[in-house]
Image (tube, rainbow, N blue to C red; front, side, top):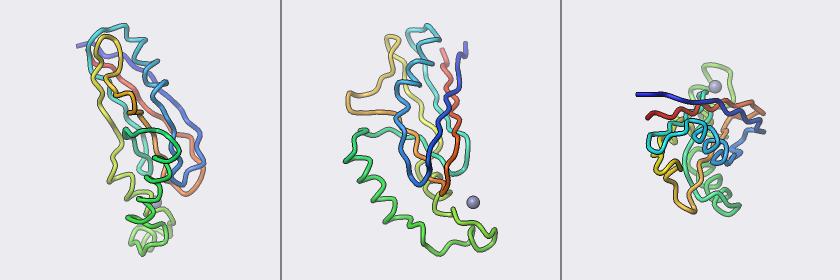
Length: 138
Ligand code: ZN
């Protein structure tokens, strides 16, 4: 098995900011020069997540609104109390969505739907520089 890969970096303002990383992942995957394989995408950090969605302003707004309702920043959290921290909601949201996705590479292209983008969501409550590791297994 061969492994090719690369890193993506994104500066974000945090607070649920959504970044479309589809093109970046596709460009790293293309450097592998393989027809079939599996592309893994992993964001480093306990307050960041990777998922797929239809990346358009309405969908982004609805997802942010849903997460605000399910896991509000102003909730009562043990993490914040014990650690004098403020971002327990960010850790919880990241844990629920997860840090990675695996996408089949078919015919040299990511097997994503037309309305399915790969996104990074930064839940921390301050600006961050995020690193995403992309690996192609073939
Ligand atoms: Zn924390």
